[in-house]
Image (cartoon, rainbow, N blue to C red; front, side):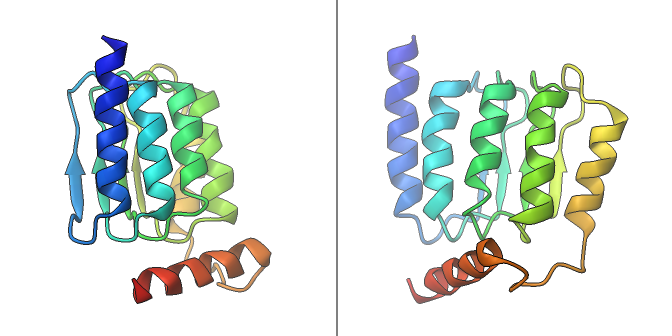
Length: 156
């Protein structure tokens, strides 16, 4: 039931907000949907330790993709995100392109295989954005705030 998902999502979010040890979290094949992803995305904004997140084989759709990509604007620790075998389309996948090109320097792997309709064009854009080594930390105000946020993570 949806009430259970909200409780699980809230407890997971609270745990991740205060986490200082967990580096990898696998929630694959757990019927995770928007209720949990919304809470998880909130936690990812402030989490400084989680490096790998596997959300494959769930009910993640474009709305979840928007929420997750939005959290990556502030997240400075996640290096790998697996969203394969879900319900993401080009619309949800494209939300990651802008974030990866302009706001996030840490995510290096984004897996979207076997989703509904993610085109090769979007996959190529994501691939280019995650492999870009020519980003500078101080290129704009958002990058500066990301840098300062990463310093904040080091001091926690």
